[in-house]
Image (cartoon, rainbow, N blue to C red):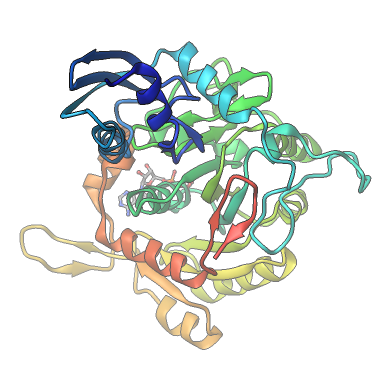
Length: 383
Ligand code: ADP
């Protein structure tokens, strides 16, 4: 005789890998119906766009079907309400580990007060990050945010847990690229990131403003404290990759705050209009000052291929990035063309749906250049 108790017990072993708790603890199992040897139930997901939907549904079905006396297991899928999602997050937070997360380089803890004894925030303890990668550029408008968003999207499609932290306070364009609006929500443990349809967690100062078109008049130390408090207070949950959309340029204020975040690697975006030699030198200096590895250079808007003739035009003049990066022994990650369809996808807030083999290759190179490791719930980097 199959009982509801037995079904719940079996499902207690099925974990939501995103939230690191069992589907029963997260209250995702609803409406268990038992009719002789037939069991049906509803699995409530945080979002129906959850990329893990098939695998989670399969695991739930298999766990029920394996019970003695069950001949047929049926799993329906539903979406949680916003309040339920919050409750699931709160459940994830309960009994959270005390070990700080990290990428093996230094602990992911943050000291706001200037003393080394400041306690680590709850949000940080809940958010071990395996790899934190910054994307920057010499100046604005070169496609830095687009590259950061595409890198995150490619890593997500590879199956990683990915966040994007938009710290380009003055030009925050990440929410627009992902089509995200509305202010970030607060729970007792901290600030919850927004989620894209594919499950990328996004935080941007723009999502904290009432009107996203308001100019962000923060300057210098105010920018620093805003970024620091976001870093302290956002409940990302465990992440394999956190991509930072850094401000362009290299002002001292930016360098200070960036060097305090546990960045592991840096990607520099440039265009052929920039002087390649200068940009590469800047990138090398940045990586030295910030004490992070320079993972490479992406030359964006490098050329345009005429769709009618297939002819390649170097619209912004000839590129010298290949020679310069080779001379400086800095990896050239890609030379990306101008693609009108990419500009359209960005404007439409559909950057995540824009699958681009060139950027997948960049993501693969970035992944390969970092030590293997996955963040675990207790913040230990598992090899
Ligand atoms: P940045 O972050 O460097 O200021 P953005 O990433 O916001 O620049 O990009 C600036 C504009 O250029 C955006 O409208 C974006 O859609 C467009 N863009 C970037 N890269 C490309 C590309 N390879 N092809 C076409 N448009 C692009």
